[in-house]
Length: 408
Ligand SMILES: [Zn+2]
Image (tube, rainbow, N blue to C red; front, side, top):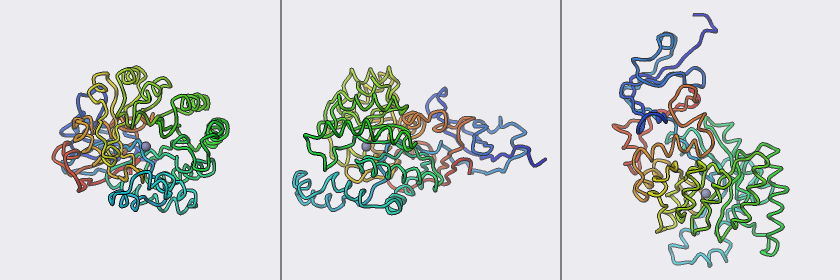
């Protein structure tokens, strides 16, 4: 064998959930194998079908009958932040109202202050354990939003730290500029029109030009941005070549689902209050529904997203942690799957597809990650489980055996 002949790695004696779109359910292969050359999968399927030239020139890993799924994709997180809101949580349990907490400087304003006060290294150091916790459960791709800086320099800082997390750790990081998350505390209600213009004319172009973001996101809600404001920002983002996403219909019906669909958004997220018209529009636009049961749980919400309607319309369903200090201080995508099944009645295949294939689609990365198919990046999660349902069924514990990122 000469030095420049291809070199392969082969994981054999495994059971696969390939999630390949043309195969039914999870795309299960009972006697399976996955092979990569460099960072790309060159084969995923029945072990008997592994090409001879691959097995002849491969480092071979015997998986001992364990399950292999695609590496998990957490497609909605706010994991770069400083400080936490544990004190506020404790105050609320002791009977304080949201208004009282807001009056004493709590809520999102507290996180904005902490993020603005932190330098890059501090922000990185505080965020890293959260990323590690996700990776320890098999996450190989994670989306990270800004939205706690709320001015150009601090939004840039959050996105810079997110990019650095991806450069310095064996994980794919996809960044989203959440420039319209909340009104900055220093902007008086009368000056909001001006601030909107500032996001559109200054912040968005700068962040797009600097290549800091892969998408633009907004929070469309009575306590945040109106549908007309979001529409203006979406026009600007798309003109700059940034795909859009939306925090939609979480706390009230703002026609967010329809708004997202109108701009061919990659995803509309939360959707508790989405209505039929919006759901049908999402199906037509191919906008993924990202369900966030962690926030639903933490806020003790009662209204569940219209899963039956989404399913019947053919909208793809993804599940994510929404990791953030205020409403979903959660780093476990496995727990998010259990919550999606328990609260929202997602099936096991929907939950697993929701953190792999459909989560990749929600990031526009469906050609790169999310399934075990030749050509995709070789990102694998190898599990000590008896059947895929174990990933959704268990609460606590971590059945991850090995995590493979980019073939390593
Ligand atoms: Zn969110």
